[in-house]
Length: 223
Image 1 (tube, helix red, strand yellow):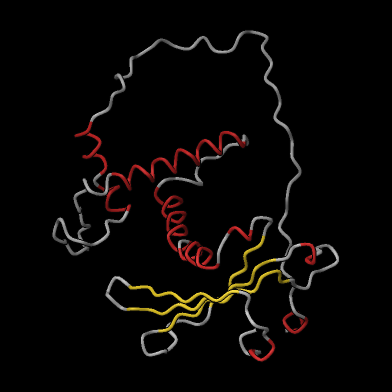
Image 2 (cartoon, rainbow, N blue to C red):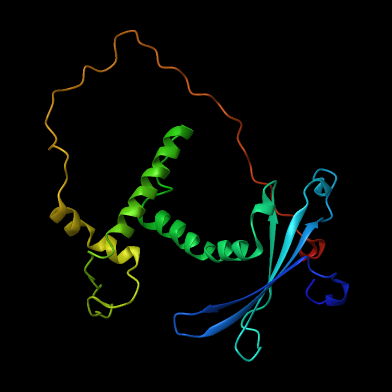
């Protein structure tokens, strides 16, 4: 679509704004928006029933050179008119941080390691992982940098952002110093177990979902 500029009609909304990077570089942002757009659908997906807002974001430097390729965004849904083009752009920029959060939660907070057939239990586990991530964020001012043997030590109280991994290394010390309002656990006897004759309810069986195999082009099949 970027090569067919002459086919565009006038945008319904144009927004010009500026952004200053951490290094003090000023970026000019041009946001164009076309409302009530439609795309070609299929027999199963009637896309004419789902109008959307098309957003084009172009970032240039102070002399007009493009910093990145123009970015195209789609805002779709019944409440799309409540989201302005600048808000859509800023929300998409936060996707970078969200992806890092999911990656860290899977690798360091065991987000995907909890195996259960109960959806409610899985949702509770995800909430617990999110709470632990918030705890790491809240303790970032208390963390001390503990570098690995192969990492370069850095000065304390610097202006660099403390990552969740750095806080997690020192979180045991932070928790030990803060303490907990909970009482210490007490030992108890053996559980009485299930009552004799008690029957366990069987789990609901669900159909197995198999991923479809990717179609192979005829040329690759012939090779």
